[in-house]
Image (cartoon, rainbow, N blue to C red; front, side, top):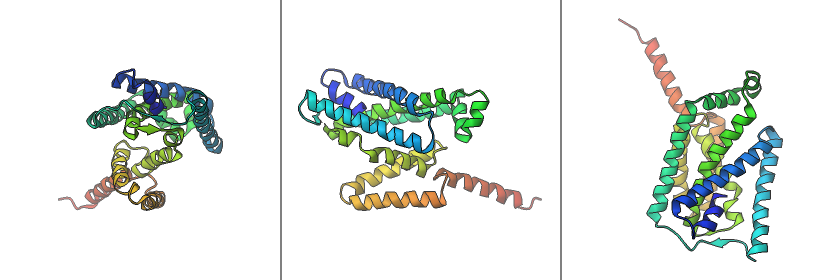
Length: 248
């Protein structure tokens, strides 16, 4: 949604305004979708979320065919590459800071309770649906901003590109590999995935996909809590060693 917003308004609005508008539209869509699907769980949640994403994709395709007579848009107004780089870097730093603030707030405490046991959190008075919608909207703001910024790097966008299911899959995979319950694990995993993408995806796309699949299998089998669990294991090992060491 952010990518299409940027493609439509970048010729008439400043760069920062286009990024902000992309983030705002993503928040609106997230609130609407979240209110509709976040009370569901399991298979129903996955199917309905996928169905609503496909509905948006096909709606944009139909609108483009009806209004413009074609599918896809070429971005004529493109800022300097350094502008795009520092914008995405600022969004990434903002996302980490927002995650730190949320973790230290009552909202973060409620999210932790929902992640541990949603029914128990609801019994204790947490408005689980409201908390999940807020979390969904906050994350959507950063996704929309990144989409608006990255669209100019592609220079051409269409529904198939920007609504590619692999983007969502890769995001989930980064969280799994890094450790969804940690802060810095997904950051480290995102850097690793970015390096893999830049070095393998264009030259050796099959090897890239095989590498992603292998990482997923290894993490599910041996690191269910992600890379962040390695640090915790190391600390526990040091604590156990110091406890067993003889004291004078």
